[in-house]
Image 1 (spheres, protein in one colour):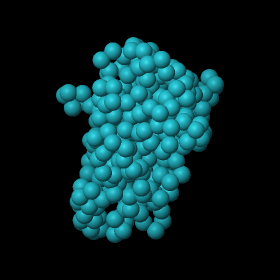
Image 2 (cartoon, helix red, strand yellow; image 1 turned 45 degrees about the horizontal axis):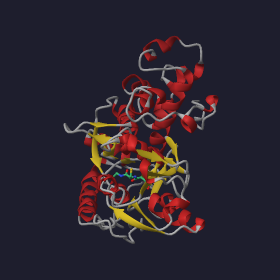
Image 3 (cartoon, protein in one colour; image 1 turned 180 degrees about the horizontal axis):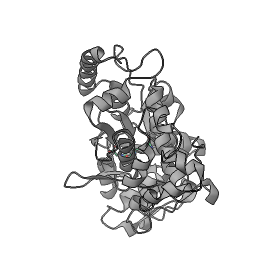
Length: 373
Ligand SMILES: N[C@@H](CCC(=O)N[C@@H](CS)C(=O)NCC(=O)O)C(=O)O
């Protein structure tokens, strides 16, 4: 976008944000535990907001640079993924992804503002331009990738939906929940899968639907439902903040595939590439053994791909519209995928989740980044 178009873009953005704030498309709060019909109806983007040029290279990178920081739509209620503490500090793997993106764009992992968005709000926030990227345990699915106007970058956490019950309930299978009540959050794939899976199994249930994780898990803690369902990562995370975590078990049932990852708006290929290659830089750094502690010494690496990744050779940064040290800055300031993972989900954290599918392909997992060349 040329400089003279910025005021117009700003005006359109302000209009869009206003529309979003007025409730444009977000599902209504259920909050009372009563079954609600709200799911994830497509939230139409305000038609006049134009984020792209005819070339397919959009205005996002320029607009983010002009603002001086990234705005990241984040979770604030799921420890280990996206969580805000009493002092307003955000942490978690999804939060660290946004820090990595800020490091790639600005050379400063702190040049990011986190905007908490609930499940129901998140797609409108992205479409309207209120946020530059959504990094919040969001599942890649067809309608989100099409009608909801998003592009998902590479999955950062492979997950599946689960069920948690009180250990003393005696419930051990999905069938044991027949006739029961299940707490679930609106605006999620969780709510949709619950209906699909229980119908397919011929198991009847009553959903108790809530607007956010705090409401959902508070109702479960108050025994207003027999089980609570969400991504298994969310169950593991939220179990840690229940009064007695050991009194609850996650059933050995996986109801769905939940590939979680960052999402950007449709139509801006340059911003998509930057968001995408930020994930690949994190994964490749782990594969090549590059860490925040040793990245400075890697200029002497004998591996040409390492030299290209770190900007010591080639022009990969320029091809993305970034400086040559974009990936160096990610790794030195945020770390590689393993460092990010272990900081929030590693064995020394309360939210420990074994790597499993989220291991490198070289270790039997699904993490596989294309070559840096
Ligand atoms: N991955 C699923 C579920 C994600 C989700 O929103 N999970 C809930 C339950 S753990 C959550 O993060 N809630 C936090 C909030 O809305 O503040 C999706 O993309 O729909």
